[in-house]
Structures are given as structure tokens and as C-alpha cells.
Length: 336
Image (cartoon, rainbow, N blue to C red; front, side):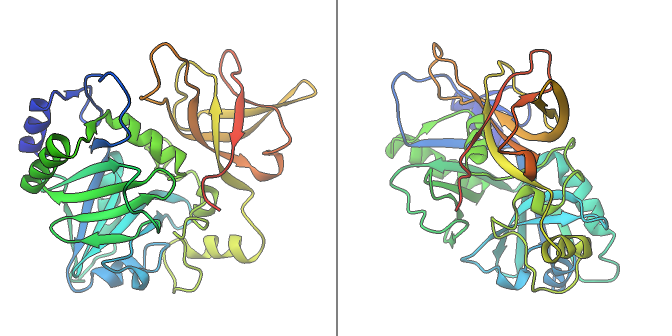
């Protein structure tokens, strides 16, 4: 994170619980216009005249479909079709901005570097030059998921249900925009973990070190989110992804769920089904987060994205494989 941006947030009464977890003092009353500093996601810039060609040969989405007004989720896979990372790919001029989990950026950069060879491609960690800001406001126009606008900053529609936008902007402009939105448009700063919570409710399947290379893209519902093209040419892992699509369907899929567990389960925690006294491991936790806006005197179920065996997902009694076997309840998937 850029030091000037961090200093500005500190002056805005932010507390850095870690480099990627930012909190603000609680404010009495409810405000549906909220703003979030996002540090758990990072920006890998891919530039050069061969950038599109490189990405087309490595990613599940079709690079030719991505424009300055249309961004896309996608996945980078290993040769066995397992997802190294999911990402949001944004085009700005001839440059591509790859938004992905901060903890995976360096490993992804190293992997892509292997395929550059003599191509005219430059990979840059731009997280020190560009900031990510989240906005949530019922008045925001979010008609199409991942629709993109570009003026003095880049804005990507991140949810049609919760009216959210992801802002990509240079540091000085980020400071000016934050001040304008907070001081003059009544946006209230909220903890960065709440943005993670809203991503979970929106079904956005971000990966971690624990879940990288665990799942093929269809297990993360990337096909339902428009993040897989089955018409483009070959890319690393494409054989496995295509075979899964054309010869049937993935045995596992992503589900939205909640649990009464008091502590958030960690990524890759095991989910079990208890049938007639017999326990069976049938899934994993992808992400989990408590609602940061819930009143302190009210218990809030932890929301989760979980990967389950499809055949068992609706018929089994699901619990976490923890000491108390906390119950898991499936919720409606957020996208049709």
C-alpha cells in the first residue's frame, strides 16, 4: 500500500489491524452509503504490445471480449486445470489491470513471467501507484455485473443486489475522492472486512494461499459468473476445464451458506455430512466472514462460500468438522 494513502487513512481515524485489515471507529445509527478501503486485493498490471496474446493463452476468460466498458472475472490455472487464482480483469487503453488477492500476487506474477519469453510484455505490481476503494449505495447505477466506466478513475459494477462499485484510482485522486465522498456526500467509512462479507454475499470466489490450486474453475461457479469462455483457443489447463464442461458437469460446486459457529472457519476447513451416524467429508470452506455492521448485542451468523459435492448438497445434514460440529445452512445462490 502506498504510504501517502496509508497516512491519509490514518488521519481519517483508520486503524490497521494488519496490512490488509483496516477498521474504523463505530458510528451510531445506520447509514446505507458506505465506503471501504480495500487492501486485501492488489493490482497486477500487464502491459506491452503482446499483453493480450499472453493473457489469452493463460486465462479462462476471453480477452477479446474485455473492453474499457466491460470487465470480467476469470481464472489462471495450472496444467491440471486447478485454479491458481481468480481475478477481475479490467482493460485501460492497451493495458490490463488484474485485480486479485494480495497474498497471491507475487506467485501469480512469477507464474506468468515463465510464459513471457521474448514477448513484449511487462508485469508490474501497481498496488503502490493505484488504490482500490469500495462504494455501496442504493442510488448507485449497477444494472450489469462488471460493467465498467472510465473517466478520471475506473469504476466497476461489483454487485447488482447490493449496489456496489469497485473504484480503481491513482493515489492523489483517491485522497481527493475519499474526502469528497465522506465530507460532502455523506458516505461513512467502514471496516475493510465488511467488503469481504459483501463479496461473499455476491458469490465472488476469491482464493487464498490455502485454497489456491484446490479447485477447477467450475467448482467456483466461474462459468455461472461469466468467467470461462468455451469458444476461445487453448490456454493452460483448458483441456481439463473443457472436458468437465462437455462430458458432464463438475462433481463439486460453490454454494452460499451460513453457520452458527462463533469463530470464522478458516479457508479449506472441512465440511462433513452426518447420515445415520456416519460422517463423510463432502466439502471445503472457501471464504467466511461475519457481518461487521451487525449490532454488538445481536449474534450474526457467519456467511460462507463453500465447495460441496453436488449430489449431496441438498440432502445431507451439513456441519463444520470442528469440536462442536456447528450446523451449516445453505442459502439461495445470489445470481440466476
